[in-house]
Amino acid sequence: MIELTREDFLYQIPLLILAVSGVMLILLEAFTEGNRRDFLMSLSVAGCVGALLSSIVLFRSIGDESIELFGGMLVADRLAYVLTGLFAGATALSAMLTADHQRTHRWEVGELYGLMLIATAGASLLSMAGSLVTIFLGVEMMSIAIYDFMAARRGSRPGTEAAMKYFLMGAFSSGFLAYGIALLYGATGTFDISSIAAFAAENPSDPLLVVGALVLVVALAFKVGAVPFHMWAPDTYEGAPTPLSGFLASVAKAAGFIAAVRIFAEAFGGDVMPFGRLGWASVFAALAAITMTVGNLAALRQERIKRMLAYSSIAHAGTILVGLVAVGVGAGDGAMAAVVYYLIAYSLTTIGAFGVVSWIGSRDKERLRIDDWSGLAVSHPLAALVMTVFLLSLGGIPPLAGFFGKFYVFSQAVSAYDQQLLWLVVIAVLNSILSLFYYLRVVMAMYFREPEGAFTPMRSPATVIALGLCAFFVVKMGVLPGGWMSIAGG
Amino acid sequence: MSDIFFHITISHFLILAAVLFAIGMVGVLVRRNALIVMMSIEIMLTAGILTILAFARLHGDMGGHAFALVLIAIAAAEAAVGLAIIVAVFRSKRHVDLERLHHLRD
Image 1 (cartoon, each protein chain N blue to C red):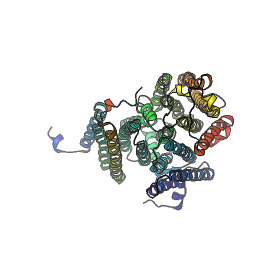
Image 2 (image 1 turned 45 degrees about the horizontal axis):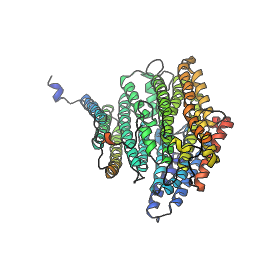
Image 3 (image 1 turned 135 degrees about the vertical axis):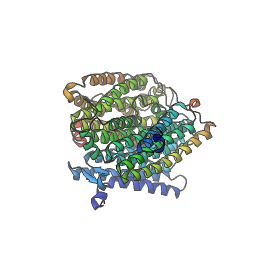
Image 4 (image 1 turned 60 degrees about the vertical axis):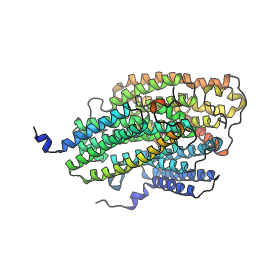
């Protein structure tokens, strides 16, 4: 019998704020007249800020403890609160950018903000998961809400097509997730991750355990968009409304990674690693190498900017997998912190990049081809500067957030496991250099080509504030990485 | 020999579930009609539920039974959203053939 205490509710306040305000927003939308969507957007941002602030408070008060809630279903620790804070912040930024996109392209849908908060609550549930049941619930809560709002732009043909592709691939991976959980349950007789860890330490090569874990790898590889399970990502990112592509690339991707951390690093992260010498990390190492290379090579030949950013996001998933491999071979808290730092840096950068893409689109022309960016530095110097910051951060140029993300991940991977991962880091570094080509192509177009004709982008304060915040944090994380690294747990 | 047919054990359920999972997976990869792909996905989820129930019986654990119910509810929610999306695609294109969706391509 599980006794519920006050702590059980106290430690999951950020999650409750997100879920409750999400449901309230959807109810409120039904009673809102026509053109009052901005008010819903502000409320959703307020909900996110509330969740962000409460995660900061709980992060400070919890220290290095790890507290089990609801009989082990949820785990409250610093990792959970950092990620919840990131999800809440990223959602607030995406919501601010979405409002303008809706107004410019005339697809005002108010339920979207409530659904975004529910998706974020699902992601936050994943970051606190202490049991495979919670993992499944979190993944589904997030995914079902995302399927809904991806299809919200009803008149757009690419939009519905993107939603359908995302739905089919997402549901396919849920099938793998359910079956993988079933096999792990069969091997261990429990859903609880710490009990599975105890079982795995004693019977590392139990066949059901190994097969179940491999099925889970497939499920999570779909969610984070790792090659060869990435086919949905470019289509979905390109067809979705631009700020929502940013949401998908930041919140949904980071949530997939935190699920992988909770399952693999914690259930199979004991001193005795299951599956032989490298443990489960060997699978991830292979995935990481292919994902980075395929993602970057495909991004090189893209003419459309959203598709290019989609392939770049696949490549970044590969780099984060390198960090996960370092966690897997026992690099410990340092590698974990590097992964978290990278997730924060990448999320802020990618939301910003998609935000600028959304900003330069006007009603009759969305300006999604790279050629459309010609001469932006002449007509809109500030927007060009901000986009340059994001692109250089994605490419890993110091002193921006992306550089330190890569630096920490690579240095942890090199020093881990007697430098056995050196080959992987070499591939990763070569890939980062390769990626500079396509990021700099956009920068070149903005600064060294003649403008092709004037246009009026959207000019609402919400977009400007959101882009300004993204750029500010991307620069700040690069100039003063130490404080952020200690937040991430290093 | 006939014992295999008359004595139904846990492994029968597990093998049935594995076969269902394989059928569902092949269906998703081979079929091109979005509705049939969705049905195949539902078969895969059913395989997961059946496996969990069989193991719950084996381990004598009520937690597994409870999770199976939760899974059924989630699968239903997912199917509802999926059907709505497929209807939206059908309205704009008058077909749901995955091969003929050309808006988003390399």
